[in-house]
Length: 239
Length: 181
Ligand code: SF4
Ligand code: SF4
Ligand code: FES
Image 1 (cartoon, each protein chain N blue to C red):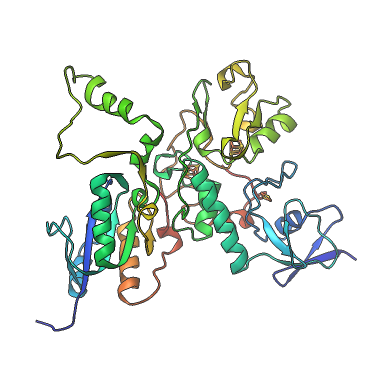
Image 2: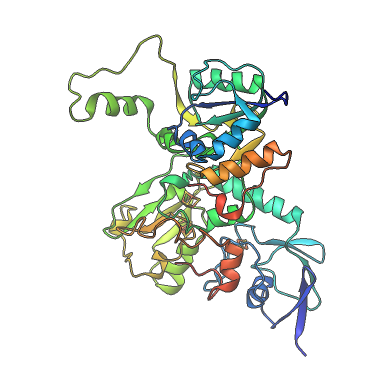
């Protein structure tokens, strides 16, 4: 007999070793997430996937599912907290969506739409963040980096290159590049790397592709991310 | 003349491009329906220069200089409901792209170094409002009651917002009307 958990009243099966997120994705239930992509080891840093499991707040992407767990996911209270997290991500970076090539295909923006975020609410930091255009094929704009480490994980675990890492603390945290000069163009990074494809935001952009998909045909123009992810191929996959 | 009291609306554009106002005009012939229900106070459409007591104030653009703050405070003081319309009013928007560029470098680039500006001077008339080193959204300066995002929000979104508000409903944009670009 297969073991089950209950998410918002729906009983779903899980296999031993699966996280709450794994089980939810398999059952096509959307739990908001940004730093999680099922292709990589969970990171558990963005906290957007916070659910209540038997009354306790846990990260769905790292918490193993347990027999009979009763989970609250889509509640007003949790969505309020998630909206606040997303608002903080907006003011901690420089997210000027009208200027961004990723707009319409961006997971951060799409999650914000899903949570009815009408404004970033908090005071903006407008932190100075460096852009790096040194690579011939890829543009790195740290203004839009949410420090999810998906590129770090992809480069390390799939590409076997270790091109990216995080450095610094607090508002000074930033993405760093593993090359003597610290520039992407001087690293071993290639446009064919998996790490070039996994950024949920517009921080890592392939050059000469900007705005090639017209407004109206972009991933989240007509469908909210909760629908795209539960209808789509593998959850978390984009573009 | 009808004696139904019309809702009084004021609008202004601070550090914006007037795109949101153009989008307001994009509701096309529904403007006539709107004018049945509202009358305009201070707005670029009437060219009235100062705000008198209003029901709704709609602000386009962020705050980039001292004059913007004066106008914004005049709106907050006079309007029962204040609405931030568009990306600039809500995030600083495109003008905020200068926020991490030194203001002096920015002025030199615009008024002196650009091609064809040989001998150009940085404007320094006392009449000109003092620029701020950073552009800010209006909610960082005054309390804002409602937000209408978009760059610009579409005519449809503006219409939905206004009709909700005028009918006394909590304004709620449909999924496709809510966008930040
Ligand atoms: S990365 Fe996403 S949220 Fe940030 S500016 Fe680009 S589209 Fe907007
Ligand atoms: S560059 Fe993109 S993938 Fe890498 S940490 Fe930043 S947001 Fe995540
Ligand atoms: S998705 Fe679980 S913490 Fe980010």
